Amino acid sequence: MEVDGMLRIFNRSEKLHNLKYSNYIGDGDTKTFNTLSENKPYGDDHLIQKIECVGHVQKRMGTRLRKLKLVYSKKKLFDGKTIGGKGRLTDSLIDKLAHYYGNAI
Image (cartoon, rainbow, N blue to C red; front, side, top):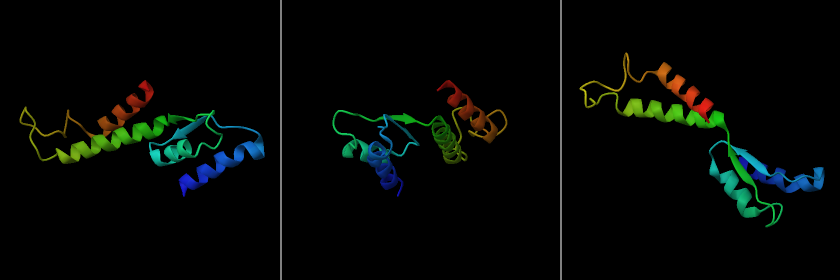
């Protein structure tokens, strides 16, 4: 549904508003951008560039760190301790890392 809607928006923008979109701000889902690139709503001469939304990049980083923490929660690391716990990878530390990562981008 998102793919079809975005394709409709791009296809009618020139006719309705006399404008061509140059950038697509995406959330990491490549289906929409790939469909726009394949359909070339403005012809071969006008390429659309994808820009990643920083908020979504931060969210994906946090999600992957939480998954990593879950996978390794029962396993001992090289120092004999688990990945989580005091002074280790906690949810608040994951939030901070994701925030700092977003600021760095």
